[in-house]
Amino acid sequence: MAVVTITKENFAQEVLQSEKPVLLDFWASWCGPCRMLSPIVDEVAEERTDVKVGKVNVDEQPELAGEFGVMSIPTLLVFKGGKLVNQAVGARPKSGVLQLLG
Image 1 (cartoon, helix red, strand yellow):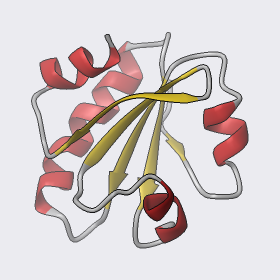
Image 2: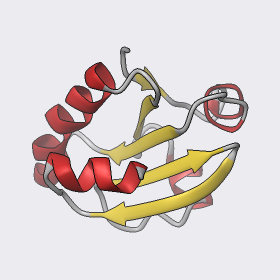
Image 3: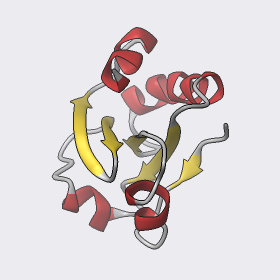
């Protein structure tokens, strides 16, 4: 499944109303650890059809970053049933990303 670009305009529909668990990657183009994590997040999106994967560019969506208290990037948030159930800050290996999903 392709990665969805999440904005404040589509957040409710893509994340809160999603039937599937949602993994959100808060990132920025200038962030080195974000560039390391990005291909891992893309792999998870391709392999896990039971999960929706979205990316939030914090430079373009500062309101969303602020709403969830994202102070450092990359930050990964996991939503299930429209509720935030897990989060992690910093780059991590694929096993760590999968562990977040439970």
